[in-house]
Image (cartoon, rainbow, N blue to C red):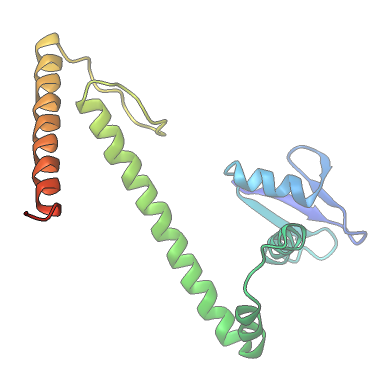
Length: 167
């Protein structure tokens, strides 16, 4: 469920769940904490979420001076709505890909850690702990890791020999 923030004509932002006024910085923190935010005009009920989120980004840019490239901003303004729609779709797609890849990496690392007998290395939402492995299983994994390390050492030596010119 989205947190509803009401924006009043005096520009004050009111968190209806917490029953208190909030700042843009606090809304940014809420979003970073994973909360879904919806900003509504208190009088008209108009959705001001996109405008408020853009304002948060612009305030951050102004304070940190790291900004978006000027050329990019010129193109965004010059080409109007069509360009903005393209950028929005592209950014949404890119962010979804990044999030998907991050989740997949976490899953792979968690699976790898569980197989190595290290238990839960990464915090993972909804991950079920694997049953404890017996000592023989742990010893087998140790031997496998040791063999892999030896193989890696051997490959590194061979690679090093190829790098050095023959006399």
